[in-house]
Length: 470
Image (cartoon, rainbow, N blue to C red):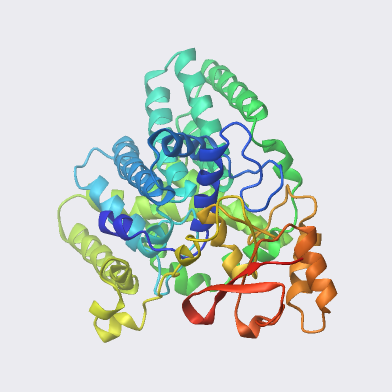
């Protein structure tokens, strides 16, 4: 993973996070929309991204170096957080390393990549995302909560936990839900008394106040956001091939439940299953982002039970089964090595699994300056803002952008086959477009149009045009 961070493969949302850091570097207090030239709030302006923005502003380092620094911090938080949390579940020295192996390899026979999910391949692609920072912080949060409950900590400790809970929720809202379910399971499993619940209540109040006062976006407005269901429908598809190895952990949870029905991992799993299941039954597919609350306790239970099993034939069988499952999971995700070596160094069987990262748009940076507006289709629009430019329409759904639909329509109009030259020029004029990135097959103004001047050529037939007349 350290070598992956050096390469920092780009597939997915990395451009969004790079753009967020870039806006904060230039305007720390009022960064505006990270993708388009509008002054709107954004849930991407979290405490974690604010920290990275400060690092970028103070050091002058490029956004890519800052993201690598952030990835290193997040990975450290994740590993140490898992280690500390597992120590609250088991005293056995093999439990933490087995837990780490289970979290990254005990998945299924089909690779699944999504932010907030830490299979090895997914982690390689999202290690610089806020979700990894938030999940690492969540493990520390659960460990601190378990220790505080055990020692019957005072008011200050619980207020600190409340503040930490708010930081996790602000940094990655979906991981915040998982962190909340894990915390609830920990509290119920500890059989907390009235005095502890009162202190927990004080921590929750402080956390809610921090959420309400966060100046960069309205956290509670996210509850009214719609349009997320179709995006998350894939979370409910192909569950068995993606997660079949986790069934070993379900068996381990059954063993733990027989010993203690209020076992925190069992409760955590049950809460995750309930929320995930309700999402599928009601069509609220965005609730599927609670799936880590199902996977994490099962993966940890498998590791903890094998590490703590009494010596003998049963332990040998359990260890052998877990080792075999981890080997299958490792082979399933073996293509992750390619993010370090590149495709050419991979054996053919591994190369067939490998997915090339995105090339990026560094080739436009000698001409396109910070704050320039670029006309581009959706895929380029997911990357171009990472270099400081804006696009006409955001490459990702933006629920705080009131004219998002109009901007999407404007991009469609520009590239549509039946649009007139006057309509296309009108779009360029309305949004102050200075540059166009397009392929010949994209549509838009033809290469020889007097309003465009060819400046540079990029990968896969892309061309950068300067708009010389609107």
